[in-house]
Length: 337
Image (cartoon, rainbow, N blue to C red; front, top):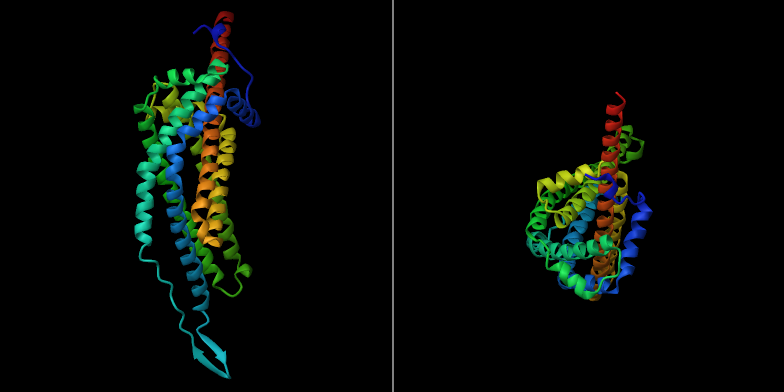
């Protein structure tokens, strides 16, 4: 390797990466138009996906809320009325019979059409971002078309399947932890004075720390998974090798990756929660709420993949710089000896 041929740019911090990503968006008007077109199929599908997801979440929240209230009431078996005791028999909540079907439909939609449509949009966005970022010039629609002719699909698809498997396993485990936390919290609150119980305090603190630690680890792995997908699109590496290479490049940059993942995680969570609240208060405007939130989620996805392209090149540059320093240091030590 000729060390003099490596173009070393300034090291980018968290805010610098966001600024570089915004500069890429502003460099080409065609890039913004093309990005919106690439996300159009996903945008047409996303409102239906969001509505089914909201239905599953609403049914789950209503069941947990009512079962929690009944759990507290069941401890007050006798009610005092008119100087006599009466037996209290609470009515138990029954889950909607369509709930399992909605859950299965949502899982199938997430694993097949949602995954494929998002992957197509990611590949096209990353390819176009790569051309703008590496050539550092304004590009035309013809340049974008020439770049897309060289697009590879097999490698990114294999990597995306690996990422989907690991992310699904983690989310299932995280959901199990959250469910366990809610159940233990419900059992503790069923007592008369739970806050006076030191065991309750210690258990709650431990569960809260476990949830926060799990979320931070998820954000760290999510940054690594996103970079692996970028690597499989930019280079001829995919699957487990792309994941290993991503972990290697992100070593020492985990803090920046966590913050970048946190920004877009909060972005998606905010609009999904606002859509869920909007559906609770305005049943007639479900499709409108879902369409608006889906559009803003797609805008955030475009920005996310531009950011992770910049993040990948910065991490790779840092690794190369470190390797050059080690090689130069080793050569100097050999000559001196």
